[in-house]
Structures are given as structure tokens and as C-alpha cells.
Length: 154
Image (tube, rainbow, N blue to C red):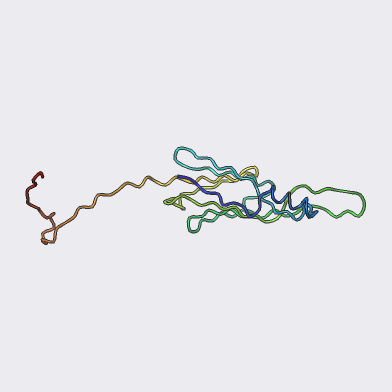
């Protein structure tokens, strides 16, 4: 059983190559917070580093078997008329999605947020066991039909 993290349209490495070739700066880059996904005995744990965000800045939704974490970190830089400054911290909106295994109950997913780290606990679905279905005959009494006969070896 596995959770599938949907790939971002462009990874950081590809962005870096394009930026170097076309001479763009970090300001135009999209913020993609890193996530860890760990499998435990009866659940999965997803952790996302979201520094500078508060609990109310983050949204978690489950729709059609996909868990989506989204939010936005606002830019905090000041304007200066003289001198130089550098902005390396990324900002902007983000959206991370992962496909849940079949059978996960969205109502049992829990999330907590502390010290800029979002933790989402996703319970594993219970093992699906085959259910035996008895076949009743068309004799109308609700009991299985009896078949009589003999077998011969050839």
C-alpha cells in the first residue's frame, strides 16, 4: 500500500537550470515547501515545514481520494532607497497533493500545527477481507439446493 505524492510541474533543479539560462532571479520562483512522508505500523505521517505561517494560513482538503495542502506566505521585505539588500526566502502561495490509498476514511485524518511544522496523520485502511456468499437454489425455501449424482473415473 502506498501514498503517491503528485510531482510538482517543475522541480527545483529544472527551475535552477532555466533561471541560469534565462537570467531570472529567485523572486520569480514559486515556493514549494518540503514534505516528509513516513509509514508507521497503522498510519502514515506527513510533515511539512511551513515557517512563518500560522495555523489559519494553511488549508487541508480531501477530495476524490486526494489530500491537498495549500496556503500562502506573504512577502516581508522593505523598500530601501540606498544600499543593497538580498532576499533569499521564498514566498507566495503553494499547493501540495498526494493520492490516498483506496479505503482511507477522510473523517479519521488528523492534523496538528506547531512551531512552523504541519503534521498530518493518515490512518491506513483496514484490510478488506473476502466475504463468503451462500448460493440459494430456486426452490423457494431459502435453503441451498441439493445436487445428487455420482462421479466416475475415466
